[in-house]
Structures are given as C-alpha cells and as structure tokens.
Length: 107
Image (tube, rainbow, N blue to C red; front, side):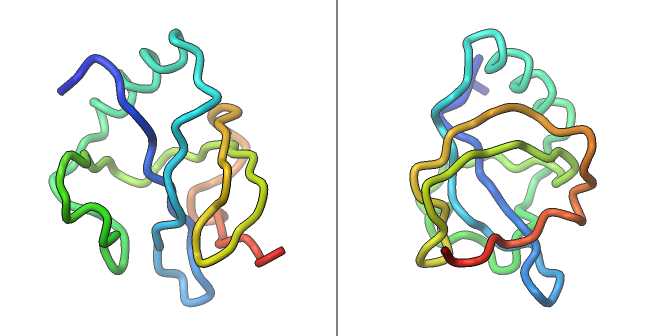
C-alpha cells in the first residue's frame, strides 16, 4: 500500500441500520495526521466492503477496506443526492460509537 491515501471513504447508518456509502473526504488532513491515520487503517484492514450495497464507484478499483470501527468528524456544505458535498476532515472522534453515526438529514 502507498504511504498515505487520497481520501477516506465515508459511511453512515440509514434508517434500517445498514451501513451506506455517503462520500469521500480528501481535504483537511495535515501530513502528520495522514501518516497516523494510515498506520491505524493498516491495522484494521479487511478484504471486503462493509457497505450495503457496496459503493458503485469502488468497482473501478484502488479502494482499500477497513473494519468500520472509527468515527471521523467531517464538516460539509450539504447532504444531497445521498452524498456529502464539500466534505473536510476535522479529526477522529472517540466520544461517539460507529453505530451512532446516522445518515445526515437533507438540508
């Protein structure tokens, strides 16, 4: 794997509890944060997507999957078309369990 990454794949739970793809975030990371997050992701790598359904964009390849056990703080402009618009990384959250992350309301 590369020493860093272009973006992180984001998911949230829908009203039925399924983990669904809601976009990628590639901005807002410092170089130090990228290296730390990359090491963490390497430790929780898995062979298959946990999303239901798998993101269609992933079919092109180049995506690496991890267990959905981390929660990120992501700022975004809007949620439309089942995707975050203009997401920016703010950091990891330790105060929220992954099961508590829900698809945001359309604003």
